[in-house]
Image (cartoon, rainbow, N blue to C red; front, side):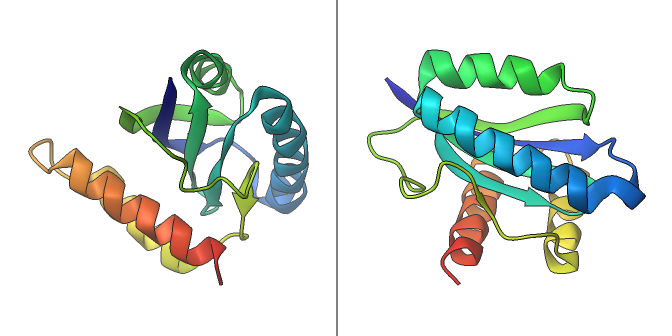
Length: 136
């Protein structure tokens, strides 16, 4: 079964090393995702990561465990985890469009949302934003 998982985490990467560290992360992730049949997109704001991953359930679960134990991430929050019939990011092992202040404001807004906010609506909105940025 294919699933889609969207998470947001706080970055523990030192700002002075961020550009190189994220470039290395993206390069390694593309190779790993191709091997694991995972597709998706990554946003990095300087303070936070937001990532959507699509693929076989066991592969996504293993990757999430890895991310939760990765020293570059803190406070990993799953926004949505759902079965899917088809991928939205099928053309990208890991799409990445660079850091963005625009995205930073929106990811901060997602994290500050009160508990009663509809997480499915928030997840759709963030996913749509990722798709739009990746097709520019």
